[in-house]
Image (tube, rainbow, N blue to C red; front, side, top):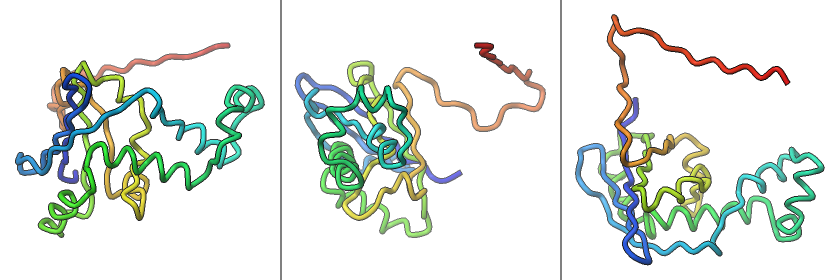
Length: 171
């Protein structure tokens, strides 16, 4: 499993703080940002539009978005905003990665406090560092976790029971 970078997102009054912790447990950077509802990101639908995967009802519902510019330019602009929320200009992250050249990919775990939980719904997979989309290229393997959740054990014990939940939709 690749080394973990953990970003803890806290809300402090009218702004947020993203604290990035390296695989050694040390703080790499702390970045403050503001997020307003006017900064909503619609990257999921835009990505589907680019892939021509929307059904007619979805196209009608998203007609306002479709009139705006879309495609890679819009995805990159929104992804850059999301990247800057966590990593600022990216220089501290770049220095950290330069100090660890043997770590070619990282598990990026976003941990949202209850006050910042609404930010978890944004498409963090489209983080854009100004040159590439690291979550789409495999450099960062993204996961989200509420801050109150316990980490999942990587390896269950041999004698532990196996539980499976199966849901079948017959309609």
